[in-house]
Every structure is written in structure tokens, then in C-alpha cells.
Image 1 (cartoon, rainbow, N blue to C red):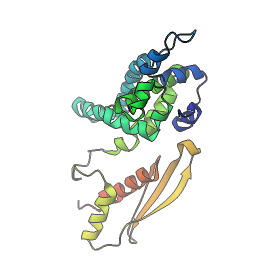
Image 2: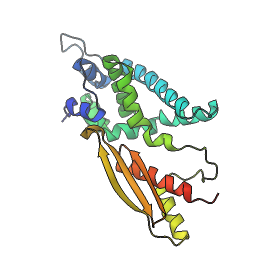
Image 3: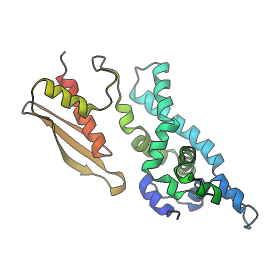
Length: 239
């Protein structure tokens, strides 16, 4: 059974003025082809919106990268952008939103597991971004991209060359570092939650014994914990 798009609005943090735009973004071509000729009004699929959403997403990601990494050259910016707009990364975003449950699919696509297919979910996400842009302008899309697509991904700042480039889990790295120094295990505590339920920001504090402490913020406790761990890890490295 298809989920109510109203709950998707809560997840993306945007209420559409024109519900038809959102509905259009969720119509897969298999459904449009299936019902074509059965209704007085033509049913359009979301392929054009997908095209527009891809362009809007690319612009916003490029804008964020240039703003946050002013010292990076074009090659590094392009590498990071390619990851952030890749199907693999966007698939994760779409799954967190449970986007597949909101799509209007034809019977054949439904029966073949279309609601979990990477291509359908990524295309649907880009179409929803375009719908947000058409309905409310660039700002709501920018907020969504910053919180859902970028967020922890842009914390991979390579400006500190002494940090091993392979580290992606700073909680684990910090734990290994303190064990090697025979220090107490890191302790994590959520010290603040702010914002509405659909768009909270968490602040997490980490302590290693009496001498090392740090805080991090993020849209999830996991992201905030990673940021807090990274801050302490970097300060504990030998200079």
C-alpha cells in the first residue's frame, strides 16, 4: 500500500503549497503508461522533474563545496562533488526517507520490487528536489541538501595531512588511540537537542579521562558523535 505523501513532507521538512507538484514528482513512468487514456487529464511521469532536480542538486552541491573548501583546486572539488551526487550516495538518502513507499508505480514495476530499486529511488529523489524548487524556490532545496545530502560528508576535510586519509570512523579511531595510550575509554553524552521533530540538531560531548573533551553537532546522534570524536582525536595526535 502506498504511503501518504503528507508524511514525506514531514521528513523532508517542507510543506508544498501546490500538492499537484509533489504528486507529479512521485509518478513513475510505469504508472503513467498504465493509466494513460483512462483519465480525462493526462498523467505525466516524473522524468522531466528528475532532469531538473539533477541540475539543481549539482548546483547546490558545487556551491557548498566552493563555500566550505575555498583552498581546494578544481580536481578535488570535482571528486567530492562526484561522490555527493552519485547514485550510491543518493540511494542512501532516499532510503532514509523511505521514498520508495511514496512512489506511484505500475503493477509490473510493483511486482518486480520497484520500491527498493536504486534507479527508481534516486530518480524519485531528484524529482522531489525539483518539485520543491518549483513550489518554493531554491532555499528549501538548499536546506534539504545541506542537512540530508551534505552534512557529515563535508566533514571529510583533508586540510590536516597528519590524519590518516583512510579514517572514516573517528569513534573507532579514537578508541584505538586511547587504548594504545592506556587511557580510559571515551564516554559519550547527548548534551542538547534542538529544533522540530522532523529536523532536530543534536549536540554530543565526548570525554577521555579528565584531560580530553570535545563536542560535535549533527542531524543525528551518530553524526554528532563522530564529529565530537574527530575533534578529540585530532587534538590527541602528536604534533
